[in-house]
Length: 305
Image (cartoon, rainbow, N blue to C red; front, top):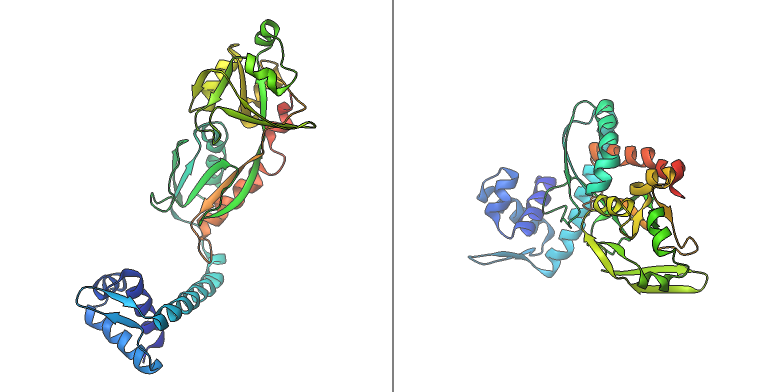
């Protein structure tokens, strides 16, 4: 009996719910897959599958055995990769999804350098600020800036995304600088459409947390649009330093309410759960961590204002 072949056939039947689909994935006939499973059941002395004319489903014993088989196959694949990956030059297609502003301002240069280091890779970058399902849309890596919620996906921290309240000196000269978060209610505010809290800004300081429902005169789903409006003197914006760092350094924007901070956000690399990472994904994520790190260049360059 080919025990490994039988285990592979059994797991695929459970995953697909029929012998024909399992056979197509394994490139075996339906009868060959069925024979593998029957031999496995005969050796174990238990029924693993409930069979009807329309569907196949695991028995209680089958479900328990399936979980153990999946772990065994993953361990075997991981062992195979451990002895081969070190010798493999990454190649093939790497599909990456990333936020629009971070992508245009910082990721593009990083990817160009990564391609120089690994010329056998072909990379597809898709930029956008809307939510995507990485598995459904076939991305190897998805970069997200967020406070990470619970998820079945695996996330690795790349770099902090610190946010500041900022405005043009001309705006503050005309309207005055807020001294307390409550003062924002009397100001024109520039808000980000995809913010999880909507048009409420949470700011925390020595006197506790403050939730401010701001009055906005511009709401956009792109941070660069809000930055341009802030530089032009149209209001106060809550924006990440990776976006406004050069403006703060040059004086085009200045920070306000420095004694208060918005909740921390982080740039994460997110990928589907597996027992191991492919070479190309692992190298790309390692490269991003090395490139941006915990003390990013946009903060070193004067993002503190």
